Amino acid sequence: YALSAAPRYHSRRFTPRMPRRQSSQSSEGSMTRSEGEQSRPSRRLGITGYVGLVREGYDELVKAIIRPPRAEYSLNDLGPSEFRYGGVDFVRQDVSVPNRRGLALCGSLWRRADLEPGSSFPCVVYLHGNASCRAEATTIASQVLALGAALFSFDFAGCGLSEGNYISLGFFERDDVETMIGWLREYAGVGAVALWGRSMGAVSSVMQAARDPSIAGLVLDSPFASLEQVALELVSGGPDGDRPEGVPNVPGFLVKSALRMVASSVKSRAGFDLYKCRPVDAAPTCFMPALFATAHDDVLVRPHHSRLIFDAFAGDKNLVTFEGDHNEMRPGFFLDSAAIFFTNVLRIPDAAALEVPTDHSGRPLPLMQVLLMQQRGAAARLYGPRGGEATQAERARLRAEAQQELERQQLEEEEMLNRAILESLSSSEPPAACRQRASDNHAPQPPPAAPPAAPFDAAAVERAAAPPADGPPSPPAPPGEATTPEEPAEDRLLAEAIKLSLQDATQAQKVAEVD
Image (cartoon, rainbow, N blue to C red):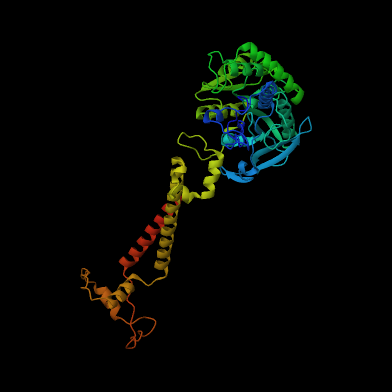
């Protein structure tokens, strides 16, 4: 019952078998019974009936261990196969790889699309919990992809879309992990590999890490130290005596006797020894760094299990505890700790990190939420009825970009206007003629003040009266033909000043654009 608890992707659950309804009509020729007699069972169960009930309950108990409800999902639940995230194009590669037992394992690799063939890249392998599937990896995809690493997840044998009828809670799952790591390194070009396991996935990580020292690091969320110990605590209670809701209180000696029978049936059906599923025994031979995590209120896999493995673990280690139970979403500070841990053990440079949409705490938004926001468009995120789904930081960034674009357009328009004025001044009539035409089209203006009289110069008068040396004076202009007065010096100076000021303004705008 308890081992079949699944965090998120259950579509089918065990339903209790209800007794058949007794017919309200009496058979032909029989006496009509009173209401009290109708409420009683029509017949008593003999010894064979009780044995059948016990056998049925026993089979359900064995199935709860090795055949929990299979998570049902489709590839659409994994998101699009091609998408853009943090300004980078990504692809999802779906694969099917046979394991040691010949069962096809279905997995997915999220990686950058611009990776060159033969290039090596770091990868985080996410291992799901009991009765779950690889779709669970989408809840932590944003944290991994934002670091600059790839993400891989697959369905264990007997889970999700993979083949197989039974699970082993880590015993055979460690072989599945080994198979997939080998495929990633041989065919996908993956370099450094780190594991992020949850519950059954964490147990599989520890048991495989004891055999593969090339694993860069482990994030272990709620692993159990011993499957036998978990079963005993679920029925008889943990160190504090509490039990999950609905589990009866059974004496310990009866539990151990029943567990031996269950272990025998598990071995005959699934082919593994329940008593040998002990990751605490594998911890002393694990020498890579590890980050442990456990929830205070977890009554399925109690916190002291993580402590037992933590104490026996040989590599560098750290333990994080938080509020919640076994299947609740993990808090943000734990996700931050996991991201920092993977950055260090996989040696991911800071330059590889992506600028992705974040929440009010500065943490990456879930990948599926970001992809949904991209489908709705930036306008809907800013001004639509569901604008609250976008983060405040993202809205501020988009507004700043829009303001910069508006300022750039204004500078371009002003530069074009200044250029047009310069060209107009270069090719237009002198200012005096322009003023003369304007005076003809508008009401008469008062005449300008006369300039001060120049001093008398007799020599200039004589030169003006004398005929030119090279011939007779030019004839006067014919009547009706106007003469253009000479442009005053002050008008020429004014035009030159306007040109220089416009050129200075244009140069200042270019400098501002460069800045």
